[in-house]
Amino acid sequence: MSVLKKRKWILWLSVLVLIVAVSITIFMQIIIHSNVPELTEGSIEQRYARQGSYHVKVEEVKSTSGEALFRIYYPAFQGDESYPIISWGNGTGATPDRYDELLTHLASWGFIVIDSYSKTTGTGKEIVEAIDYLRNENQLANSLFYQKIQMEHIGVAGHSQGSTGVINAHTNYKSGSFIKTVVSIALRVT
Image (cartoon, rainbow, N blue to C red; front, top):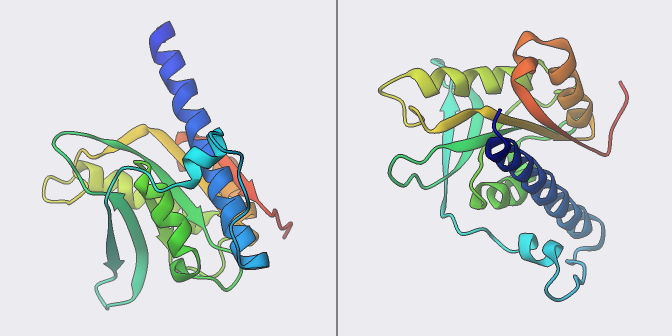
C-alpha cells in the first residue's frame, strides 16, 4: 500500500471514529440530560457535532412478505462518488427509530449507514447480514446502491447489546473480515 493510500486510510478511519464518538456523546447527553453539551469553540468536537454537508435520504428494505428488514441512511448521491458504510447494532429492544437522529447525522458526513430492524443484535448475525445485503446491492446494476459503496471501508458501530454484536460480527463471521473499524458504545456482555 502506498504511503498516500495509507495516510488516506488512516484519515478516513480517524474521522469515522471521531464522528461516531461525538455523535454518540451528543445522543447520550440528549437521552440522559435532554440537552447538548457545551463544546469548546473551534474544537474538532464542535465541528463534527454539526450536521455534515450531505443531504440525507432514507431507504426502507422489506422482505417479499412486507416485513421491515433494514433502514438505510445515505448521502444524496452525486455523480460517480462512492461512500464508506457503517452497519449499526441496536440496543436490546430498539429499532432504527430509536437511533434516527444519530444515523442521519452520520450519513450527513458521507457514510451509508444500515440498521436492521432486529431487536436482538448481540450475536452480530444481523449486523453482518446488513453488510452482506449492501455488498450484494453494490454489484446489482439495477440497485440504487450499485457501485456506490467503498467495500474496502466498512465500519460497524453499536450500542448496548449492539455493542456486543459489532464485536461478535467482526470476530465470529467470515464477512467480519471486511470490517475495518469497530465502535463499541456502552458494551453489554451477553
